[in-house]
Amino acid sequence: MSNREFAKNLIDQIPENRLFYVISYLQGAAVPDKMPNMETLEAFAELDSGGGHHFAGSTEQLFAELMEN
Image (cartoon, rainbow, N blue to C red; front, side, top):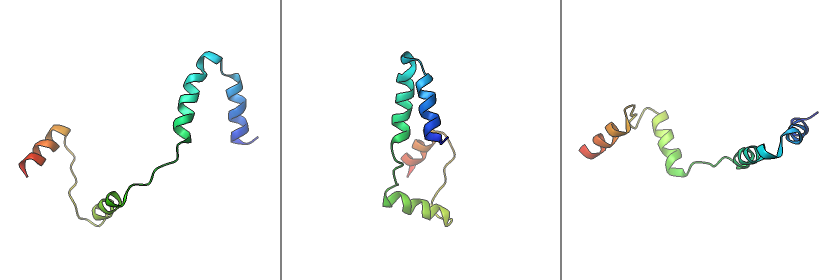
């Protein structure tokens, strides 16, 4: 039995009042992964090559640092 057939069999066993949750999950799972845009890919490449700036603080600290520059 394939995974798809197994999933269909399991769905048949779910009570009607709980199918909403399964449908919501499946709709999210069915959306294809989106590729980052070129600017984001370039930023990843910059970090991978040792450039850029890695920040590991809180959101408040990040905005404080951004406001200083």
